[in-house]
Length: 240
Image 1 (cartoon, helix red, strand yellow):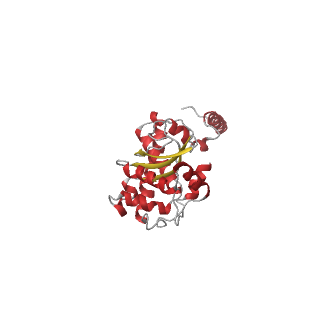
Image 2 (cartoon, helix red, strand yellow):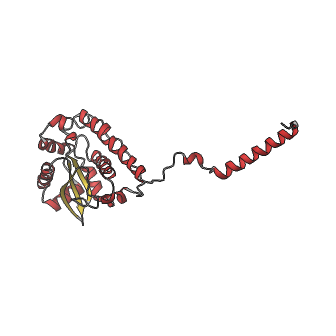
């Protein structure tokens, strides 16, 4: 092996280092650290924080049901839909676009996307110590249904007559309020939903929402649910 001087060795080493630095600057983007956490999929569902304690809706909805519902069922929908968005490279940037193309989504994306959005909406529709609606909410309900009692009658029918799992809804379409229901985790924002319109109020009638306390008595659950309806949120949804 041919001997080289210390000076030549150092000189060659410096050249190799320089080449390495140049190569790194060419092939490694300056924002490499950012790229590690960057997702090319703009839409990501997030679980909203509950605005009340698990026990806050007692005795109408029990604390154990609320905790399981929120930490297990809803959390699973969030996890699963975000996995589907990444795995399937779903391109939609907003929930509106996502649901507007629901008919083209995989069952995993559609069902879990619906479950994620529906539950976030449902949590906000409730609060402890609810009172009767007033102001904008009362005016809109009376204008569309004639009275609060008639609205409740129609809404309860939608909730109790939905076979199996699903949701009861108050929606606004073409300036008018109407009630109806959807199966499974469908919602009125989906392009192929049975009921379409802007969601104003929703009730989860899946058994996991009430079975620990009410067992098979869905009607009792629906009746007692009126005691925790957040009518301020209803008014907000009517005006937004």
